[in-house]
Length: 444
Image 1 (cartoon, helix red, strand yellow):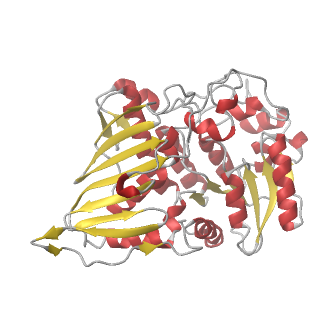
Image 2: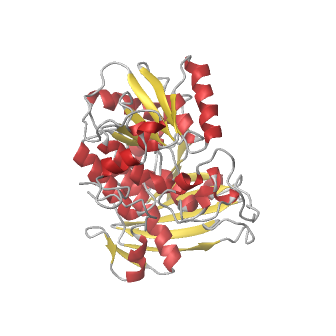
C-alpha cells in the first residue's frame, strides 16, 4: 500500500484526510482507489500550482478540442484568484478553487491534473493523484531525488495511469528530425556528447532577511515535506529553483531538458561514473545555494557526456545559450530549441558529410502544444505518452547524479541495478529526502 501523509495515531490515510477537514474545503472526498474509465468526450482538467508553467500547460491543453478547466489549486490565494479570473475570461466558466491539493484530488469531476508545484512536491502529489484515479501531466524534473523517481515509476505501474512529464522537446518536430539523423549512423562513431545551458538573464539574488509570510499564503503547506524554515522571499515562487530543499538548480531545471536529448539520441541509460565541480563563481555574494557555474563528466558505455552551465553568460559552445552537440568521427550535429545543423569533419580536403542548411524549428511545432496534445490523446487511447515516467526518470536521475557528485566532491561509481553508489556511502544519503512530519515519503 502506498502511504504518504502521516495519518496520526491509529488512523488510515483516508481517515486522516477526513479529520483534516478536506470536505470542508469545498468538496467531499471521492474514494482514492476509484479507477476512472478512459475519457471519450470532454476531459476535465485540474491544476495544482498555477502560477507559472502550470498555467502555461493549461492554456496549451485548452487548445485541444474536448477539454475544459474545472478546478485550480494553489497555496497562494492571490495567485489562485488571478488564475481563476483568467480561466473565466478565456472560457466563460469559473473553476472551483482549492488551497489543499488533496481536496482537488477528491473532486469527482476531475479527470486529469497538471502538477506544476516546486520539485520537492512532485513525487507525493503525483503518487496521490494516481491513487485517486487521475491521469497526470507533471512538470519537470520528475522528482527532487533519485529515490522518488523510482517510487513514481512504481506508482504509475500499480495504478495504471497515463502520466506525461513536461520534457516537451520529446514532441517537437525538429527535435524528432535531429534524433533520426543522430541515430542514422551518418555521424560515425559518437564518442562525446556535450550539453550546456548558459543563462545570461539569471542575475545575482541579493541576500534578504527572513520576513513575514505574505497575506493569503499558506506557507506551511507550501513547505510541505521540506524542512521547516522561516519565510524568506528569496526562496518563494520562481527562485525556489536555487535552493537544495526544493530543487537542484540549473542542473535539474534545464539539465533534464537537455540531458534527456543526450540519452534519447544515444539510446543510453545511466553512466558508470560521474564527477562534477563548480560553485558560485559568477555571483559569490548571491543568496543562491545551488551553483551558478558547474561542469560534470559522465562515463557511459562507449561515450562520455559533458554537462556545463553558467549564469550571467549567454554565449556557450557553438555561440548558443543552450544546446546539445553530438560529436562523431564524421561530423557534429548541434541542436537547440531554434534549429539543428551539421558541422562536417574533413579528410584529405573533402567533407565527410553532405552539407545541408540548418533545419529551423517550424512555427507552432516546437513542442509544448504537441506534447500536451499527445497527453490528451493518450488519455483517450490509454497508450504510453511520449515522455512517460520511465523516460523522464532517465533524465532526472542523470541530473541528480551530477549534483550528488558536486555536493560530495567525489568521483562516484553508480550501480543502476541496485540504485546506489558503490564507492561512497555518504553519497547514498542523498538518494531519498527526509520528509518533514506529518508528511511521509510514499511507499509502494
